[in-house]
Length: 307
Image (cartoon, rainbow, N blue to C red):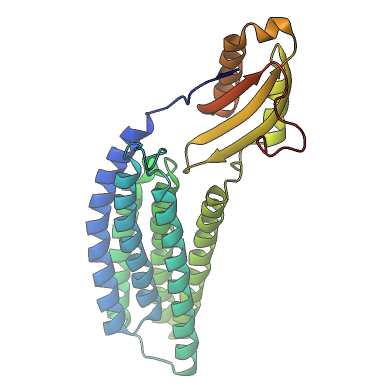
């Protein structure tokens, strides 16, 4: 019986360092945007502007947590945390998404309140501040564009900025519509549009985070197909105890037991391990594996060691 130790891919560390520096820049930029939009919303009476400031506030908090997440997730393994702290980025992303949902609930409450008790809106303040928010959000989004798929944490940060940029366009559109029509409900309608965008991005992150925490197979990997591909390897008789999971948004792990198909296979288990690992990396980009090669199935069907 032989086991193969985990294969590690360290390419992701460069992403973490580069992403960390960019996050730091975007944090300071969004602090300015948040303050400008909130003060502008109070002075103008625009709920859409205050809503966008609230969304930007969630960006600031998420980016700050994201910066910490990038740093902490990059720490190496220890005796206590044998995987390192890679899953910390998933905790941060989940906290960001839940906070965003809270912002959405608050905006909805304010929209209903202002529908019942309308507030005068000063277009002369609303439009210029909305344009400042748009410019800042667009710049922030462009800064993180290359890292937007590198980790779940960076994906969450980029989605925050993307939807904030769209909501800033909506705020500007609402200001223009108010200037020509004077209909205050336009401001409230834009606020609710922002809420729907917030909910959509939040639920996506919550779904991905929950799948990782519950150790589900990644969305892009079909477990049955992996099972069949391993079974097709030369001298592989059967496969059991197959598990596929992620510890963060980028690294997929696999473990399984492989029964060899005959004496020839049993005498060269290292070759089987190399072939299986090569197939998994080339086909599924799985680089972390633990393979137990057996001449006979050591676990009974009623046992629990392979489940």
